[in-house]
Length: 464
Ligand code: DUC
Ligand code: ZN
Ligand code: ZN
Image (cartoon, rainbow, N blue to C red; front, side):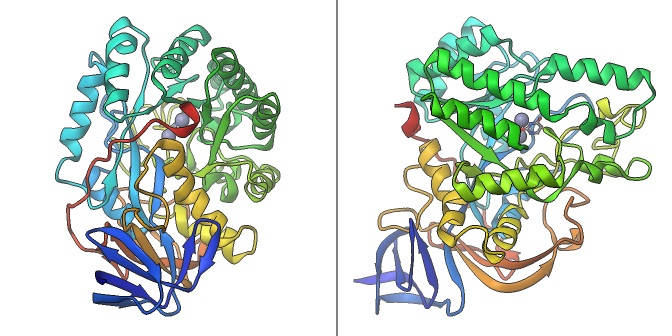
């Protein structure tokens, strides 16, 4: 067979095994894994590692963020940055604006993404209301269209659901075969601490971290897994930041609850001290849950090494720093409460885990591929994606495992005006990204294409 394209000479990271084979690509799919393959075009990847294209199953792009506040990335800039960081699919959330139905929100996101994306996109939903239209009509219809996962929040005024409401949403997930993702932090406990801090004049960015301590996440994680147990559904606990929350997840699993879990680069590399800088600088690191301390970083690493986490995502939620439509929003300097919540990370997620995990000998190449691509595809129903295997989309990233870089804003393509990892040194970086066999990034430069598509998903395997 003559392939359209053959990649030769790379170490190829297949599910569970690293192989020295050629990858033959035909019509955008992986057609053959073997030796001496023939192709109309050949990429010599000697010295490089071929990984499944990264899937970032937790990103926020062009998400409504309150009056006057704007996210730093649209679909064009976010997918460009993602491709440069070794990704081929991103999964943003559709959040309804005030007065919008969930279906209207999804239509609006499709309109924002249409014709803009360099890589593939697949939407999750955010359920912030349990009215009859949302639960009885929109959710079932959208799940049937392949938007088979949705997030609920236990925190944030206007977004949080009560336990009773979460159970109602989980019941729809159960009936329709969808996966519920939970942001687990106890809003009442946070509000208690936040009020107290403000009354004491503790208004600087670091008090964002101090008013969302580990117990508020631990308790909510226990409650979320218990609600899933009661509703008899699987649940994904997103952005787990500490060992106590992970312990709750492990305890629930031991009871037989189907709990999946996610962690992110900020919880293995940053700490609450990053928020504790002179003036307003710490706002650059304000995200929820907040980064913790080096002891909690070690607990998250232990979980990653033991396979306790299913996925490693960025939780990319970008705002500009020097911008009153970003971190410097009206009231943000008067109280941490008003600082837009989130950090950019779509471009740096994979190099950070590769360097800190694979290069430092904490995780294997095959675990890296599972945590950054294969498990995301399996869990969320991206059946054509996530692995270098015959029949899958040829979403492949070539990594130079020896390339040394110091992360710096000047080199990044995301829309933020800063990176929380400024000055962080890494070894290993993606040098070529192929989406369905087409190069979309070469040597750090995106090609400028807009061939990314929206991908409908199957029911998550755990929810069948
Ligand atoms: N939760 C997220 O998942 N992303 C940004 C902010 C938040 O609270
Ligand atoms: Zn969240
Ligand atoms: Zn998020």
